[in-house]
Length: 56
Image: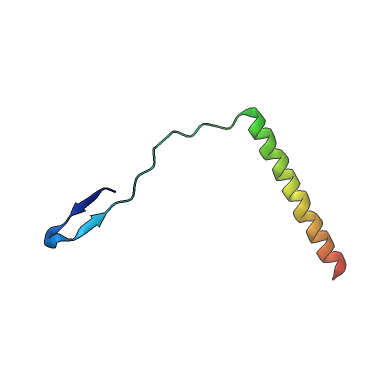
C-alpha cells in the first residue's frame, strides 16, 4: 500500500486508485432496453397509484 511519511514520523496512507476509462455511449439495443424498463416502471407506479386510490 502506498504511503508517505509526514513530518513527525506520521504515516499517511493512500487508497489504491482504480484504472480510469472513458465511458462508451449505449448501443441501440441498450437504448431500447432502457426505454422498455422506463415504460415498465411507469406502468408499475401507475398501477400502484391506481390501487392506492381505489382502496382509499
